[in-house]
Length: 276
Image (cartoon, rainbow, N blue to C red):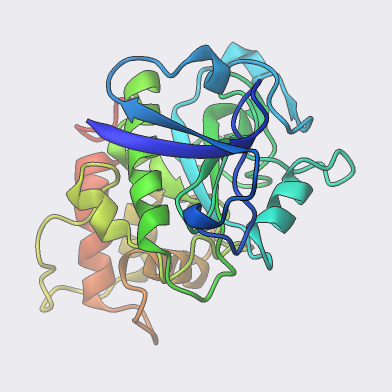
């Protein structure tokens, strides 16, 4: 059974995340904690229901249910600054969840609603990613490691979201996956392989054959079958490496070609594990 702790000020409504730069011991007077045990049961109505702080949401178009989770980093100076922006009606941006580097998770938008986090892009043929997804923002400037408490909170939250909405691991993606030409988050420091080991994402299952062919058309075809949108090979390679080979550089190699083929075979939109 996993646990998720949320910090808040005030007795009513959904708990709110702690101030950026303050650990759990630094919460000021009046702060309260709610720790949830995350199992197969639904979250309490106080967490998934109304009264959440961000006004930036709408209805999911066509009445669809979420079938994707999109992970972001905030790229802002503090969690408090990110929260203010995600709740600012003038900003017209939001996410369902915000997790501080100290592991404090706050619900900003009801998961039943369409938050405005993904923007232009696509995944597995779905163009309106906002309507089909739940967005999670991680308090991180973009070039720093993700803190262990933050990752633990993310793991617990992901496990719960995936159970409640029947979202399979291959449908947990990064912002850079669905918008590879314009986004880099959650970036090269994010531990996708660690999530995959816990069944919360996916990873190529076998060591690639380094003697295989290097074929840009084959790589693009595999990447697109796995879910990436239609872009030139160099853009797809950059996004693919951000997630699966963050230290790699230079031209396409047999490694990426084989890794993409493995993912396409196992999780392609028309493959054996693609039902979602």
